[in-house]
Each structure stands twice: as structure tokens, then as C-alpha cells.
Image (tube, rainbow, N blue to C red; front, side, top):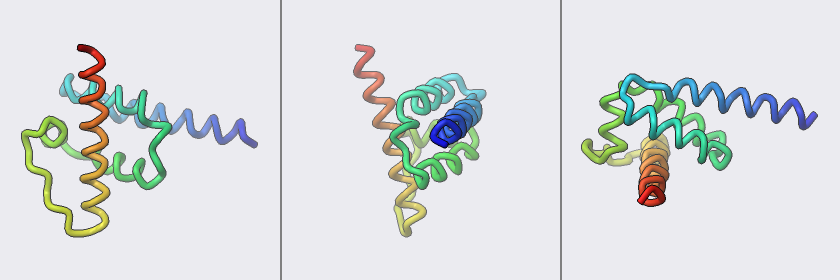
Length: 101
């Protein structure tokens, strides 16, 4: 039984990695690394939020991650979850940049 769960988890991680392939190289790199290093730590709710963020156009998503776009004030649980996920992606990106130095 555990084997099937692991197979499903691996398949879902590959699906997310594929969806993270973007036309904007910088975004592609950030998202691919995020899935590679952070996927296992994400909850089901966080995965759903991440999945929704992947529907954003590249430039809009990159602006949110790169601090060039203001994050909307959270007025409800959905917005708070979205902002928390953006923060998580930013933090993972900054940690990766610090490791490279």
C-alpha cells in the first residue's frame, strides 16, 4: 500500500515540476528549485495554493516573487494562504541565493 502512495506522490511532484517550466527563465529556475527542494514539506492545502499560483502569467508571478509587485492585503483565508505561499517561495529563493554566495 505504501508503494502506491509513494508512486502517486512522485507522479504529483513530476506534474508540478512540469507546470513550473515557464517561458521566463528566471521564474523557471526559481520554481523548479522550489519544487525540487520544498515539495516534500508542503501540505495539501499549500499544494493547492501553489497550483493556483501556477496559473498566473509569468510576468505577474515573477513580479510577486521578485518584490517588484505589491502583494494584495489579505482580507480572507484564501488571500492569507496565497501570501504565505508567495513568502515561502521568496524565502526558498533567498536561501538558495545565500547558499550560492
